[in-house]
Length: 201
Image (tube, rainbow, N blue to C red; front, side, top):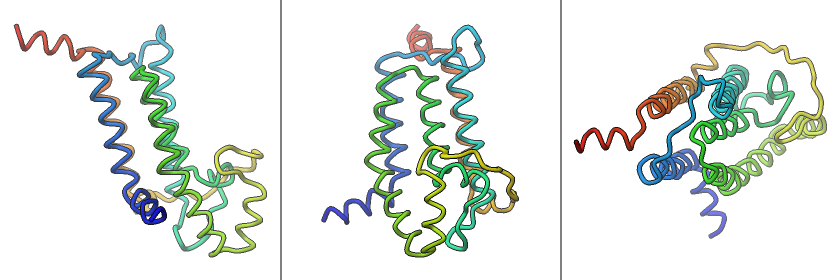
């Protein structure tokens, strides 16, 4: 039963993660009337810091998506020489970046809860599958890399393919981030309470 629940959560992890995060963000703007930080204001570090984290996350995901050949060969170069899961790390950076821009600490707690509930079991299953598929090659790879952070700083040159990037549909993440950043900028300039007051008057 527990394994079935894990499989359902893993299969729907992106939809469920976005749903939970969207509920908390809606609460921030429509119930708690939070005004997000300005992503371009150097006088408020949280906005630019969040903007940098989001772009770093998108960049890391795009870099990884242009290199990996899923189920064909073990990716060990480029971002995969730094961490075994650069796509997940990129997503985490993006989420923390958005939390920084929004400015509600509860969202950070939600993000890490999502990681523990949805992604840690998924990573464990992926690593088990990769160990079964690639055997000794995987074992050697894990000796020089970690799940999340770099053990060493190796040479990072790797052939990046735009077609690979397109094939993994990474443009969805890029476009989504740009849209959300634009919305957060608008919500900073035109906070929800002011909009609602304008409609009522």
